[in-house]
View 1 (spheres, rainbow, N blue to C red):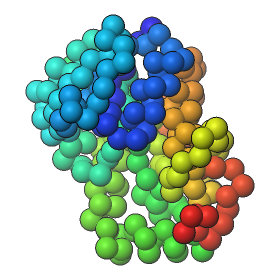
View 2 (view 1 turned 180 degrees about the vertical axis):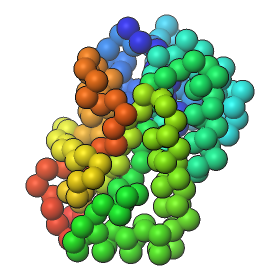
View 3 (view 1 turned 30 degrees about the vertical axis):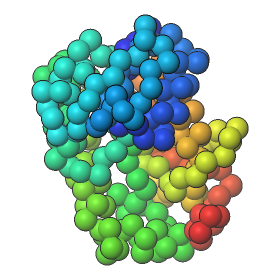
Length: 219
């Protein structure tokens, strides 16, 4: 049994992951979010606790990390927050982290979809500053000496029951244009329960099989 900290627990994937952990494991969960007591509801007070704070509040992060075995980071869109999380983990003595990033941080998306993706969220797009932050956050995680798993997630949508995912390694071309939040949560659950070292210190692309298109189906 583990104690798992979800940073960004009020996000959609954070909430879905919480439900899966409660329903399918015996792990205890620390839910960390801004205004967490207003935005989150405890369903099992013997296994859940809420901490309020943001990702730049090192003291709150350290307090939330007490006796935690694994941290899930739901957003890496601010490199200063990522650095604070890493520093807090080191001070708290927590080594294991799963971090959600986005596709394209290594310019690894080929073909027409790569052109479209870069136009939408790449360095030259209207949200290019956020891509810069994602790139720097990934660099910080990879150089942190933590036992990290970095998830480079494709374009997200919801579909109940669709937990299909495929993975690409760092250095390989990214494949697939989309993936469900349900599949991402399934992957995180699989990583949490994995007993081998195959997910340690790796950066993996996450998408849905058979979606090698010019853009996601919902665009």
